[in-house]
Image 1 (cartoon, rainbow, N blue to C red):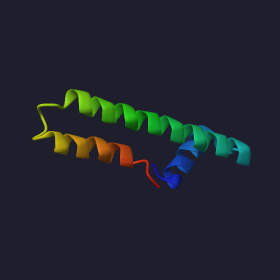
Image 2: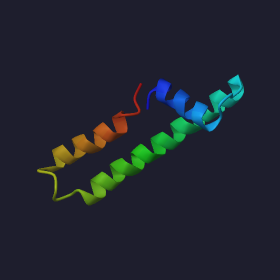
Image 3: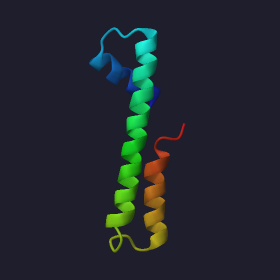
Image 4: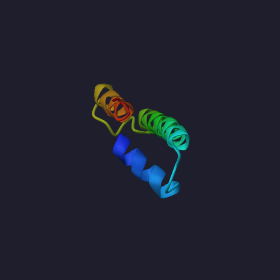
Length: 71
């Protein structure tokens, strides 16, 4: 999720956040997004065996999910 997307979500949730509130909400949103990406990657690794052509492809998919949070 980009910083711009995070800011938009924060404004939707709290239209006029203070600087401290904005920082806290942004930090919390990043933690939630990271946890969700990891859960998706683990689900992919556990459930997609047999659907992917090989383990390398499966690893690339899980890696791509995890990398979505990289700056």
